[in-house]
Length: 277
Image (cartoon, rainbow, N blue to C red):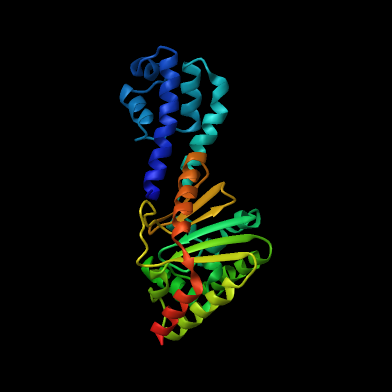
């Protein structure tokens, strides 16, 4: 599921709850809008998910429907939706290093990690050389300035400490091994690093062969799942965080399907190393 669709679907689900509340009280869109000081078209946009609704709006809605006690729960849902989509320019405004630090609290609280990769080798598996090449590319593409690249590399490398305290199941598309972000020597070192990590007792690394019979296991964006409770998806223009149960389940189910296609990683990595040689 595309990340933008996840945000839209969450808005539609909230809108459906509000519509059900309105109808249960026998109110039309016009009458509820009049009670809240809105047009009927605004009510329709909220109910269909085309417009969001803030805490003040939810309080007005639930009061008009005679159910003000439901406001806190609905406000929490609405705020969660608004925080789903964090634009990269907001997160990186303070520099690449700060952007890398953004996720540290969540990582500290996680015991079971799952990751799927189609574009980049996942962060904690990266060598410094690969990380530097990737971040330099990101900085150029997004027109970022600053001199914190070294700190950003160190911050990402520090995530390797989590291999000692948590379990990881990482699934990558075979094409990731051949997507060249750095010179061949750096790529060979990076792939050799993957073989080392594959031996870690708490890390399970699988690779989906290019010729896999995919069935329902379609390719997705790179994403991480934290304790099956939170999902983070990195896309070109934004960083998406999902905590709604049904949204998280979509990604957990997708991961399970992708995981079933994964083969032993070392033979495929060795083939890629040979290609860079």
